Length: 122
Image 1: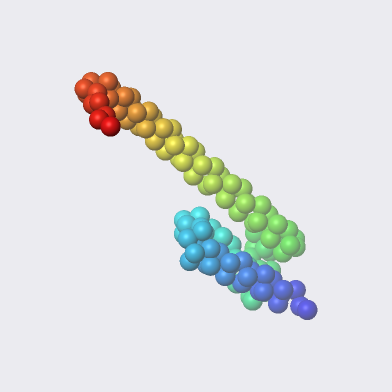
Image 2: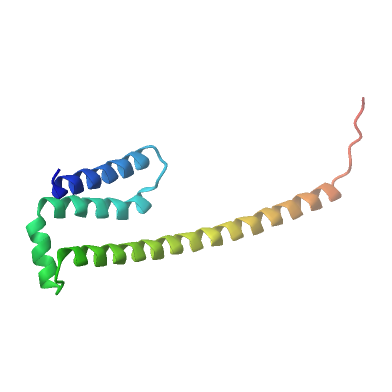
C-alpha cells in the first residue's frame, strides 16, 4: 500500500470521526474545528505531496518529514494552549456557580427561619 493512500485513509477517518462526534453532540464545534483543520490538511498534503516538498524547501527544511514533525509539534502545542484556556474558563464558571448556589442556600435558610412553622395535622 502506498504511503499517500494510507495518509489519505487515516486523515479521512479522523475527519469523519470528528464530524460524527459533533453530529452526536459528544464534541462541540469550537473544539472540533482544530481537529478538522489538521485532518483536512493531512488529506490535502497527501494528495498534493509535491506541494509539501515545495513548502518545506521554501521554509528551509531539508526533508518534508522534518517539516511535518515540526508543524505537528506546533499544532499540538497550540491545541494544548487553547484547551488550557478553555479549562481555566470552565473553572471560573464553576467557581461562580458554586458561589451563587451557596448564596441561594443561605437565602433559603434565612427565609425558612423567618417563616412561621406550620404544624402538620395528622
